[in-house]
Length: 553
Image (cartoon, rainbow, N blue to C red):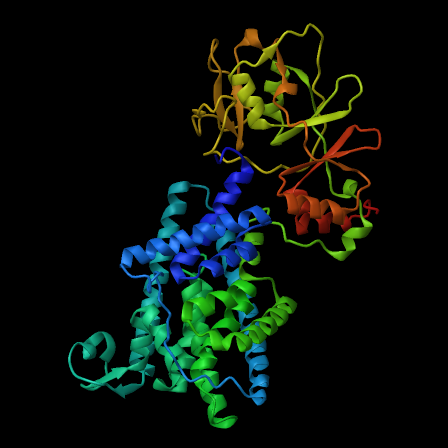
């Protein structure tokens, strides 16, 4: 198992769902989260596999705690509260919170993306690996000190004291700070207490805190998230977002109760505020509603939460991309959206395809060795020598495996490999998960060959594997360069291909729905003319092609 790209991507999606469900005790929510955020495509076969994994994950947590009533690492159960979300006159407040969540979430996304862009530009100027590591550690240490200093200063200079329930451990310095004996600091409880307990305190009854305290916590945590999310250390995203949204939502609930509807319960607005900010920043609607319902146990608020997250998502989409999409674009990851754009209908596959690098079904071993060294691509269309007709697809690691395992055939005719120029690099293979024809491990000496110019065969009798510019290459003995590889026996004979005149929208849908990495493009007479990858379907690449003067439908 997990010997090909599709199975490895499925494993990652299932793992993300299982981890999320075990953290929040939401097996269905974890499944939906993986569908919405962690997967480019999600097949029907993945549903029961992922749901089984999330159920097993939550059951393991229950076994760890020894109780089936506790099946999450983070418990946000707020118990039974009197829900006031029953009056039609409260519906406008849901839209107000949703719009505010969309605006605040979009502002956070843009500011955080700008901060990470500056961080990327700065680190891009540092070539020395040791110096780069030093700077990243120094930045993490500085932001840690800045966070602690800022939160402590807020507690000391802006904290509000409230009477405690009893003397004893509760009034140690952790909660009391500069408050008189017998009192506790509201900011100290929320900022320096357990993050889980702080959220539960706000969701249960925000009226235990003053409006200024909730507003301060929400804005302070939001500001710190802008500069810390994306640092070299894992700072977390979900729990700080819930704390920010619930604090601002609780503040809004107290204001609404004071000036608008005196009968409302602010705790409901804490939950709605958390949903609004999460939807405004992350843009996951279905999974968010289910996670909040499963995590808090407050099922009576499902309709207000749905109204709020839909409104927040709608407003947020007008203002910015989601936080995950922003960071994916910043890191140049080839992640594709689920739907194509309407204007793709008028353009063709040839508009965005890269020129093909083809190989014949019976290829000369020496030419294959040179091809792997010179071409940056990760897969090659296989064609017939005489007609040039497309007959299949072969990956780079399969060619390397064929040379390593000496999959030769007797062929006295001269075969050729046709190489044409290409202006884009295909997706690199995973260096830690190479597979050979016989499932033998590749022993690659990483870092031995720094560039193509420095690469030379290091042995006369055996094959040698290495990496050149991020691509796996192989050196074969000189006397084997004149042998012929049976490419036809290892290629994928049923690889999906499209016509060069196929609509771009159809190409996009085929690629994303089937989870492809390479999509060959053929002409009307069946010859391979190009290849489409995730790189070719990215928004930046398509926009550059469509805006080019030489680009016509």
